[in-house]
Length: 120
Image (cartoon, rainbow, N blue to C red):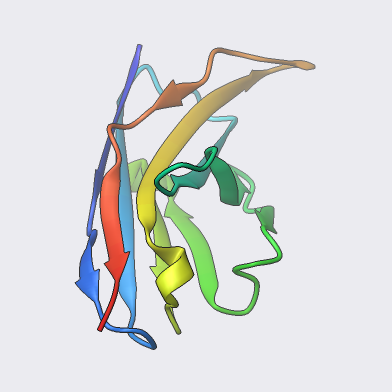
Protein backbone atom coordinates (compact mmCIF):
# COMPACT_ATOMS: atom_id res chain seq x y z
CA UNK A 1 0.00 0.00 0.00
CA UNK A 2 1.06 3.55 -0.74
CA UNK A 3 -0.31 6.66 0.93
CA UNK A 4 -0.21 10.06 -0.78
CA UNK A 5 -0.82 13.38 0.95
CA UNK A 6 -1.09 16.61 -1.03
CA UNK A 7 -0.58 20.07 0.42
CA UNK A 8 -0.03 23.65 -0.70
CA UNK A 9 -3.36 24.50 -2.29
CA UNK A 10 -5.20 27.72 -1.61
CA UNK A 11 -6.63 30.92 -3.01
CA UNK A 12 -4.41 33.01 -5.28
CA UNK A 13 -4.98 35.94 -7.60
CA UNK A 14 -4.57 35.60 -11.37
CA UNK A 15 -0.91 35.83 -12.29
CA UNK A 16 0.13 34.51 -8.90
CA UNK A 17 2.03 31.37 -7.92
CA UNK A 18 1.53 28.32 -5.75
CA UNK A 19 3.66 25.29 -4.97
CA UNK A 20 1.95 21.96 -4.38
CA UNK A 21 3.60 19.06 -2.60
CA UNK A 22 2.76 15.35 -2.59
CA UNK A 23 4.35 13.20 0.10
CA UNK A 24 4.37 9.45 -0.51
CA UNK A 25 4.75 6.82 2.19
CA UNK A 26 4.37 3.07 2.53
CA UNK A 27 5.67 0.49 0.06
CA UNK A 28 7.49 2.80 -2.35
CA UNK A 29 9.27 1.02 -5.19
CA UNK A 30 12.35 2.76 -6.53
CA UNK A 31 11.25 2.62 -10.17
CA UNK A 32 7.98 4.49 -10.46
CA UNK A 33 6.04 7.34 -11.97
CA UNK A 34 4.13 10.08 -10.20
CA UNK A 35 1.82 12.67 -11.57
CA UNK A 36 -0.48 15.61 -10.97
CA UNK A 37 -4.04 15.60 -12.23
CA UNK A 38 -6.83 18.10 -11.70
CA UNK A 39 -10.60 18.12 -11.79
CA UNK A 40 -12.68 21.26 -12.15
CA UNK A 41 -16.39 21.31 -11.22
CA UNK A 42 -18.46 19.55 -13.86
CA UNK A 43 -15.40 18.36 -15.77
CA UNK A 44 -13.45 15.13 -16.02
CA UNK A 45 -10.16 14.66 -14.25
CA UNK A 46 -7.30 15.64 -16.56
CA UNK A 47 -3.56 15.19 -16.68
CA UNK A 48 -1.43 18.14 -15.61
CA UNK A 49 2.09 16.68 -15.51
CA UNK A 50 3.95 13.47 -14.81
CA UNK A 51 7.48 12.61 -13.75
CA UNK A 52 9.31 9.30 -13.55
CA UNK A 53 11.79 8.26 -10.89
CA UNK A 54 14.46 8.85 -13.54
CA UNK A 55 13.35 12.45 -14.00
CA UNK A 56 11.51 12.27 -17.34
CA UNK A 57 8.64 14.74 -17.44
CA UNK A 58 5.49 15.27 -19.45
CA UNK A 59 3.10 18.25 -19.39
CA UNK A 60 -0.36 19.05 -20.64
CA UNK A 61 -0.24 21.72 -23.35
CA UNK A 62 -2.35 24.02 -21.20
CA UNK A 63 0.35 24.30 -18.51
CA UNK A 64 3.56 24.13 -20.52
CA UNK A 65 5.83 27.05 -19.72
CA UNK A 66 3.88 27.91 -16.57
CA UNK A 67 4.05 24.78 -14.38
CA UNK A 68 7.12 22.79 -13.36
CA UNK A 69 6.98 19.28 -11.92
CA UNK A 70 9.87 17.99 -9.82
CA UNK A 71 10.59 15.37 -7.20
CA UNK A 72 12.96 14.53 -4.37
CA UNK A 73 13.39 10.76 -4.45
CA UNK A 74 15.19 10.74 -1.10
CA UNK A 75 12.11 12.30 0.52
CA UNK A 76 9.56 10.45 -1.66
CA UNK A 77 8.02 13.83 -2.37
CA UNK A 78 6.82 15.38 -5.61
CA UNK A 79 6.20 19.06 -6.28
CA UNK A 80 4.29 21.21 -8.72
CA UNK A 81 5.41 24.81 -9.06
CA UNK A 82 2.56 26.76 -10.63
CA UNK A 83 3.29 30.23 -12.00
CA UNK A 84 1.21 32.71 -13.99
CA UNK A 85 -1.94 31.10 -12.69
CA UNK A 86 -5.20 31.65 -14.55
CA UNK A 87 -8.81 31.33 -13.39
CA UNK A 88 -9.13 28.25 -15.59
CA UNK A 89 -6.50 26.53 -13.43
CA UNK A 90 -9.05 26.42 -10.62
CA UNK A 91 -9.61 22.79 -9.68
CA UNK A 92 -8.94 20.10 -7.13
CA UNK A 93 -5.41 18.86 -7.75
CA UNK A 94 -4.61 15.20 -7.14
CA UNK A 95 -1.32 13.38 -7.12
CA UNK A 96 -0.86 9.76 -8.08
CA UNK A 97 1.78 7.07 -7.94
CA UNK A 98 2.39 3.77 -9.65
CA UNK A 99 5.37 1.43 -9.56
CA UNK A 100 7.09 -0.06 -12.59
CA UNK A 101 7.89 -3.77 -12.40
CA UNK A 102 9.83 -4.72 -15.49
CA UNK A 103 7.45 -4.20 -18.42
CA UNK A 104 4.31 -3.83 -16.34
CA UNK A 105 2.81 -1.27 -13.98
CA UNK A 106 1.47 -1.82 -10.49
CA UNK A 107 -1.80 -0.36 -9.19
CA UNK A 108 -2.35 3.39 -9.23
CA UNK A 109 -2.69 5.17 -5.91
CA UNK A 110 -4.30 8.59 -5.46
CA UNK A 111 -4.13 11.30 -2.86
CA UNK A 112 -7.16 13.02 -1.39
CA UNK A 113 -6.69 16.20 -3.41
CA UNK A 114 -5.99 19.83 -2.62
CA UNK A 115 -8.11 22.76 -3.79
CA UNK A 116 -6.55 25.47 -5.93
CA UNK A 117 -8.68 28.55 -6.57
CA UNK A 118 -7.50 31.34 -8.86
CA UNK A 119 -9.68 34.40 -8.45
CA UNK A 120 -9.45 38.12 -7.89
